[in-house]
Length: 229
Image (cartoon, rainbow, N blue to C red):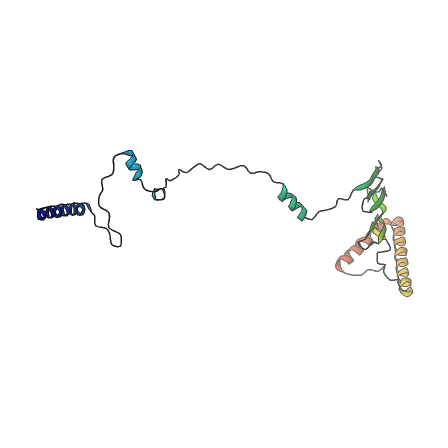
């Protein structure tokens, strides 16, 4: 009797092993063999107990959202720091400014600034003739300022048909002309003056002859030749 019971148990074990091998699948090389198929429980409580842990569950992929720029808050602190690092310029105020304009072209102007600059100037027109129908503007004035080394500089100037002439203690002056050279220059200037007087007298007394001489002189000058007075 015992022998029959043991034989029956062996048959049951063999049939269970064959059923398990029938549902088992062959695993690839290097991977553990898959487990035998087990029927999933049908009740909700059983399915919750058999659910995989949270770390093994697949992570749901988030849907892409439309880009929305976020408003930036105004922070004046960086700009203030940048202003501190930059070099600043000091504005120089105008303390005084006056100008008077005449109907004849004359004028007078003056101004003074906060950094000790003072300037004044006057001007007028003169010598209205055919050669200068608009006249010649004559300007005269002065200006004062402080140099970087603290020295006060005064300049007086005049500007007319003879050009611009300025005087001041800080302006270099040429050395004096030697007496012998000065005498020679005076003789040259005197000869030029006498020649101009003779030409003016001849042009007034004999204009036709004077015009012919001027044409001959122009021709000789053009050819690079000399002419006799």
